[in-house]
Length: 207
Image 1: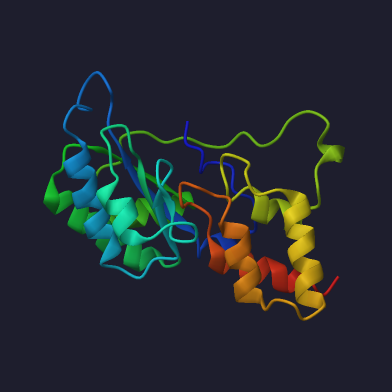
Image 2: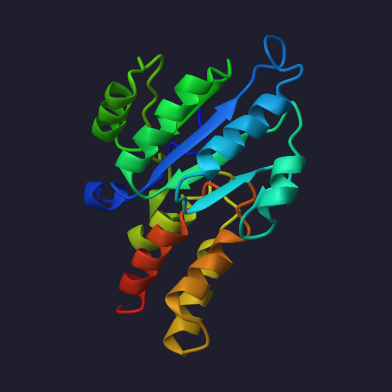
């Protein structure tokens, strides 16, 4: 199951949020896969991305491109976030042409992903859906805050940090872009979408 599966939000907002990453299987094609992952990273980096990274070395908000690129290991998982499905479709085309022999995972709206794969000439292998959140959901923060915190699938972006960024924006200590960048820092693997965070923060400061 992907850690990018549980992103919350309205469909219109999620149209600007698509994640592409690749993985190897330790007992199948893991050995020597670091070089292939560097190639994947180079391919996705050619396109305008919102975030990029690998959990082993960090994202563009807490590391840098060279460190991430040079630090790939066989166990690494390179991630990239885009805000445009057409751009992501071109990324998939390039990845398919590279024929890296790695599993590629795409998270986003199903209709958009189906169209992306059709455009790229790819067949979808497996589909996973989020079953939502069960249990004492009354203890969860409100929907706008969840839209931000669920963009970090490892739950490293806390609701309290979101509220603090809202306070700082309201006080004029940070602008929306700076606050979104601060929220992106704890997300080590680079799947946090700062552009979406800006949009949600804009709504939260009006409350």
